[in-house]
Length: 253
Image (cartoon, rainbow, N blue to C red; front, side, top):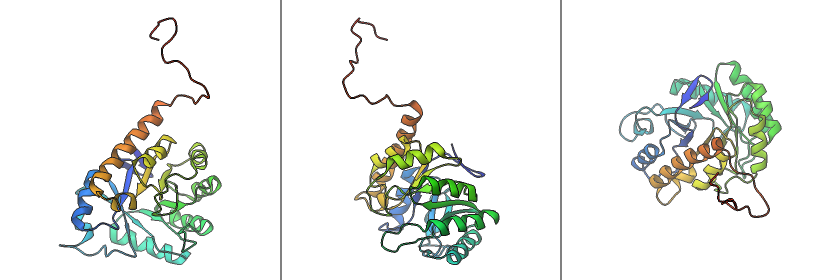
């Protein structure tokens, strides 16, 4: 069970809604993912639309919305978009993005921390997207973030977890759930994130951009579950030389 603020989720996989070839394909992929929370861009999607062709009506039953502030480059724009998302979606959840660089889409850490402070005081459950900086993760928790979402790699890059050591430090120091956001390319990337101890993974391009999005969504669901179980089980230590798996004295234990 993943708990973010007052919200409880049975799935540790959070997915997006962009880049699919059709609404039907999106619906099938979201269902295959087993996700319970789906992120939507407030600035890019008409969340008020209803009926045939409307994104909200194409979501699988019971799936909850996570409005995000994608495309925002200033504090005021991010705050305004978050408030609009709360009104349109009827939720206090917000995936906070304040972009600092148009080419890399890396977040502006200082503005993200400031926006988190404001939104947390207004009663939002804030999930900020941030660099894989352990200090920034701590500052966001201090600012009132309900979870912190460090990037694994640049958005849409598919490069996987480029700095697992920073992610591990963030997890070890965490006071709130840690959810890797951005950079996942395939199922093994999601498993690595979970094996590092992350509480969840958020992705969009890795599923929507796959040759078979529905099959990839299922693979991601299995990878997140497997990675979490492996983390909880505790891996064996790494050794430079071989260790026989069968004891020399013939014992089985």
